[in-house]
Structures are given as C-alpha cells and as structure tokens.
Image (cartoon, rainbow, N blue to C red; front, side):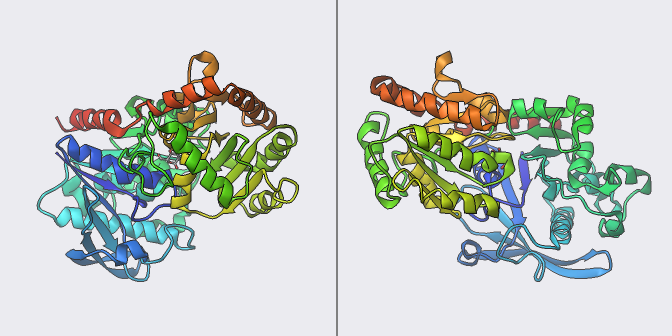
Length: 468
Ligand code: GLC
C-alpha cells in the first residue's frame, strides 16, 4: 500500500502549527507498519529546503486560468523516515512563509494542480491520497470530476480536518482556475455563494477524519458555518486522535534541553531545566512555574490572558511564562505585564522551537484554555516531559486529559473564561504545595502513552477499508 500525504506543512521542513507536527510524524510511523507513506508539499524558500540535496523527478507547465506557470517536482533527500517531494513553482510558491500572501488562493490551487498533473503522469499510482486541511481541499473534487484526471477517479481520497476555522473561501470570479470539470458538479464547489475548498473536500473526499473524536462531535455544533454539512456527511467521518512523535519529544534524549531525565530522574532533571528558565527569564524559582506555548489568537483564549495572569499573579505565589506570537494587541498587553510583575512574569514574543522544548522540560504546569482545540499536541508534549496540563474540556484536550479530582493527572475546567482559568491556577498552586502528590502526578504524566503507534494503526485500518 502506497499513501501520498498532500499538505502545506511538514515538520521540520515548514512549520506554522500542529499540522506540521502531524504530517512530519504520521508517515514515519506508517512506514514502520509496512506501508509506504510519502509526503508532498510546496517548495518554500527556506534554509531547511535549500540546504538539502534535491533530485528533479518531473517537470511540466500548468495553467491557472489564463496564466501559465512552469513547475518542477523535486525529491528532497532527508533522513526523516519517509520520502518527501516538493512542488516548485517559481514566482508563486517559493517564498519564505507558508501562508499570509494576497495570492494564497492562486498558490495553493496551483500546488494542487501540479500534484495531480504529476500523479496522473506517474506510472506507479498511490493507493490512497490523503489530504490535510483546506489547502489541499480541491484534490478530491478534481480527481472525481476534472476530465484531465479521470484516470485517478478510483483512487480513494481522505481529508483530515486539523482546523475547520480556516476554509480558504474565494469568489466565483476565479472559477476558471479549476481545471475543466463536469459542469453538473459545480454545486460541489459552492458554500454560501463562495467557492469553499474545505466544504468541497468535505463533500467529495471518500472519508473524512478529524484529529480527535470529541472535535468531530463538536463540529456539528461549531464549524464556522459548515455545521450542517458536517452533520450531513457524518456517516463517512471518523475521529482519530493525533499522537506524539516520541523520537522528537523525549526528555531522555532531547538535545534541546538543559538536562535530560527519565521518570526515575524527573526530580533533578526538571529542577535543572526550571533553573535555566528562571535564570533566563528572571523568574523566582521557588514558585510553581506556569507556561503557555502557542499562537496568541482568540481560538487559544489569548485575549483573556492578560486578565487571567493579572488576577492570578496578584493573589498567587506563582510565576508565568509565555512563548508565542499572534494578535498584536495581545502581544502588547502581555509585554506590559512585565512591569508590575518583574520576578514572576515574562514572555518571549515569537516562535522558537528550542525554547518550546526547554519550556516543556522546565515548567510545572502548562496552560491551554483554548476556545477551540481540534486535538492539541502541546498537552501531550507536556505530559511526556512531566509537566501537568491545565486544560479546558474541549476537543482533543477533553479526550486526552483527566482531572486529578477524577483520579487523573491534569487540571480541567469547562469554560474558556477568566474565572474558570484563574480557579484552575488556584487549584494548581494549592496542589503544588502538596509536593508528595505533585511529584507522584508528574511521574504519572510521563508514563502516559500518547505515541503515534495506536493512531497510525487506526489510519491503516481506514486505508484498508477503502482499498479492499
Ligand atoms: C491544528 C489544531 C490543533 C491540532 C493540529 C494538528 O493546529 O488547531 O488542535 O493539534 O492542527 O492536527
């Protein structure tokens, strides 16, 4: 069995969020199960790509409306544990960032056309094409209804929804970008009078997966306008929880942290890592350290952070550290908290993979008060590093964290509100005072297995059900 994952991100080649971690790990675990799993993504202009050996495997031209572009498919020689292909479209895809350009519609549509132009010409066809999020959402439609891809009609397609908030909509004035298709099917492109790649994929993919079972349930209530559609397509949908790449996230071997540790040596290991963080960020090491890592956006509850932190720091004996970037107003507010809380608060505004590892290793608690969390990987990374997660019961957070009050290993609350999060921090501070229970729980956290092994098996069963 030969699987082709089509994605905009893949760690460590190009990462904006969790999508990259999943696409960078799942294929590796799938290959271990004996299937051949490959990845194709856009060729971005970044140093990871430029510094690796590349081999050209296909060259051609594609048309987007009336504009024609040359493109090339390159195989990037890496040691990632799966074959990696890149679509190079000079002037369109070869930019530094993954998203955020005015012509993202053109960029990702031409990416998808190039992928299928290559697949349709290649002798060995994949057994399944596995698409991730809206950037790859036209692939199932084009394979079923575009004349030039008619030989791909019988290849099963899967869409994995990592985040339904983003759908990539654009106007019907760009309809001619989509290669000639059976006009009776035009309705499949439409959602609320716009061309909507995510909605199109939900309608056309053979199967849909979401990155956790709870997220699938929640999508029929909150899906940024696609609730009805997702409810309607429920019989072909399945929630499969993401996993952790235990080679990348391993406190015993992680080269990015100050001191390695195992369950046995967690006490001294976490202490050394915490000392490093407290020194670097000028925080009092005697207090419990709470951290947040992620995008500073509404979905993550970031607009509530300054109020939460202000209230908690005023009354509690705690330190808080933030790593992330996003909304400029939130960033500014978070920076200003340094003034009243000099030795108990700090932030690093930006993205820094090395620092993220250090924070998982050196923190006592990780905060995730998300409004929406399709899966969430950070709580699983935290667990592996013996950092107790404090989460809102939503999406994948609900599926992976059990409250200490229910015999579990985390702290959970129901709402993404200032009062709920402050209350959880209060509970955590109190729990920290009972060092015996705290240390026992952190060992328990480290022993929970959320590796990809189980989920990779679930995807395999899904592929088998489609190819038999
Ligand atoms: C998106 C979601 C996140 C999920 C990740 C990987 O970034 O917001 O919850 O863990 O995709 O699937």
